[in-house]
Image 1 (cartoon, helix red, strand yellow):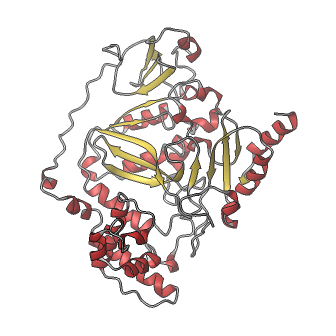
Image 2: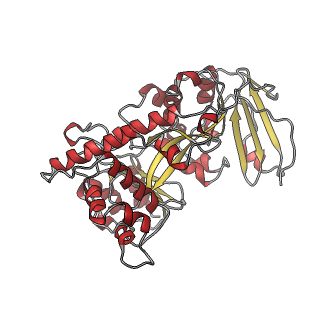
Image 3: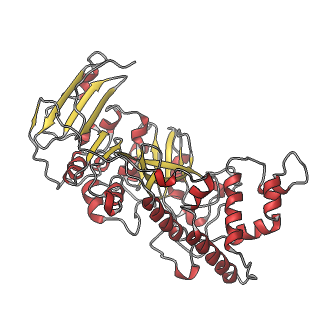
Length: 449
């Protein structure tokens, strides 16, 4: 890369750039791009659509004007970044759990943690000796005899059906079209067809009603007429276009998501171990909110912060809405713990009252882990465990540096304990791994295959 290009890239990294501006810069770049992040567009009555086919995506020539004007950020394979998206939301942690990659990151942006939080712990060479508090066994007896449909209807219940029916009919009238007069039973049938289409792949949505026996789905064919299905799909809506919250970039889905979150929490049977991570919802359709992340199992879709139980149950979730964040976000949590970890603490606050006092164990990766976060969780009566980046280990922590551990044989381990009960462990695996936690000690040490 020549000197002029270095200066241009450096200056670009300090500015908020649009997708169109980044596209022009990339035309002159020779380096490989790892990921492009696009902020969701502002909420409006009519949805943005690109002109690409549903099963393709990401072509700059197919994007709408509002998408091209949206803020964006590009990450190169060598770690350089241009654009203005928040670095504490990046996906660098998935490149590996070692400390090598994190050493090249920006300390302020990578940590995403307020420098004003006091770090006054004293550290010593010691193991964490702690017995976990008693946790009651989960009670699933009330769900034992439920069929799959009955379990589904615990979440997509009558209230959800009524919401979809009401807003679907309103949207048709908003477009000056005849009232489709959808009923709750029809909406339940429609949702069933949509769910079925998720695991019976056909070339198109009309194929279920095809005259050929090789494609026709008899159950769908007998349940709903094709034209009726298409009519409902055309007007399907979750929110009133006359009452959109413009600060919420997912305002058209918010009423449905609010109902679903309440039901997820209502039917959550507390278990001790909970994990917090980001997830991608695969989506190839026409919407400005979708992100493209190269090198991931799911390249196109929506990024969602998820709190899950060990058995896979989704306790709570929050869809990532870009730099501006969600309307209900906690500015204090974001300031103290970063934009990536703040949703976790809000989800903890939203746990049912009967579960708040339980000693949960939270697990996360190095995108979220910080000493202040562990200290905060411990102060609330919870425990936390996660891989941690080198620039989030306090300077006064006397644990061996990654470059020293990297020269040691595989299995070499170092650990130190703070006076407030946080242990930092670093060992040599395929690369250097660092974990900080408040519950699990080093002993017993054993070999792993």
